[in-house]
Length: 328
Image (cartoon, rainbow, N blue to C red; front, side, top):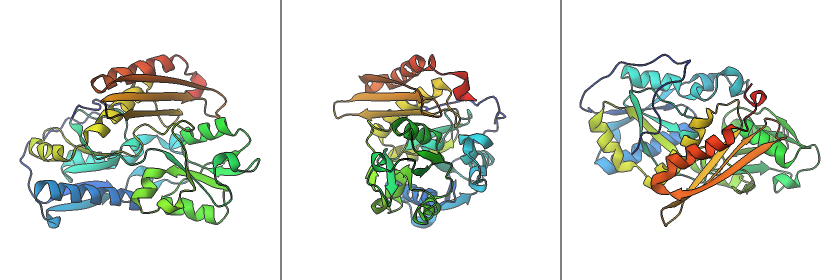
């Protein structure tokens, strides 16, 4: 698999410690401790055991609480962005407390420390956003000035773009918390990722899946990635057995797009790539004003081997439209 990113942002100290050792058992999987994260970690464990002939006890799951998990009363943009869900896990990987880390790829920064690599991507689940409401069948059916809860500035901006009359409020917490608040009438509707709901066995909670054409997803939404130390060659070889090439191609395109835009949780950016059965990729990208009052879109069509260049080229086009106030 090609490297998705390498290096660090200017706020993160470089990690240079390198270990060289053969993989021993048990293999320790680091993950966030949320219900969804644990479901994803168990999927990785089961696939790894099946592919490598390991017993269940040969692979253990190590839950790790991240800063993003601890702080739930403020928007991510106000406390540091995507790295809040990965920092503590990567420290454990760096220190050798775990052997690999399982991530929702939409939470991953586009730049990784040189010692780490995203070695494997599992088959992608439905990348669309889910509309959930007990009073309307779709976003366009909500009454005037209805309240929609969302912690994602991408979703907030696209909701306001489609329905400027709606009130969009900050709405953090795990999936169960958000669904409970919806039942209690705190909001009239909310949006979550279809992928997470399906993986949790909560697909019946989805009122309607919003089409890609109506709402572009977050970059890499629905994809699970496995991060490992670059030096752990034996383990990397085993993990390559799990890699899903179509998902890898799509995610590389999307993350190349995001990387050029230097997007963070302060910038509404959306992107989606689709690989067809002919080996061709269609990509759509968008940047928006946080209030949804302006949006700029672009599309690319390319062969699978050209996805990184296509993603970067699409981003370069849109980068000229980014306004300083959108990044504040």
